Amino acid sequence: MGISGSGFKNDMNKKQIVVQINEILDEMSRDRLLVLLKQLKKTPSKWKRKYPRQTCSISVDFDTHDYSSEKPIKNLSANGAYIEAGESFSIGQQIVIWVTIPGEKLSPLKISAVVARRDRNGVGVKFQNLSQKEKELLTCFEKLDNA
Image (spheres, rainbow, N blue to C red):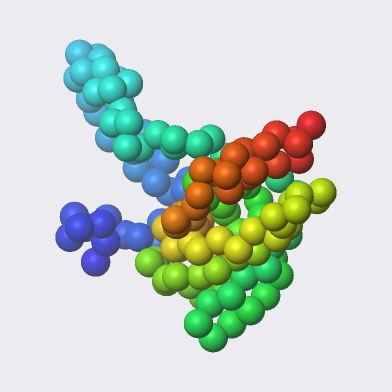
């Protein structure tokens, strides 16, 4: 049906969603809009990324239970990545990725991840059980890649 039985369609594209939100906002009073703005500015910290994603231009190898491939990463953080992989993935699916960091002795890093979101262009994965050293390497690498 949609989002939690609310009647919303999950197949709407971003533009359609923005149009519907704007229609709702146009009908609200100024005072209600100010209340909504105040609530949005108090965004729960769980919605904010602990480690900001940085655009990068590397490819990673990944494995699922029955599939292996090499695909480009669109962005990367010490906590996750967006992989440009059009293959079918399921939310919650476990994958293993290998990130090669040039000049690093511990490279490639073998990272367990879970698919946190997906769209037609790829998947957002959340890294699991990273050591502090691995997080530091990824953080340093994202800075180097963007230099």
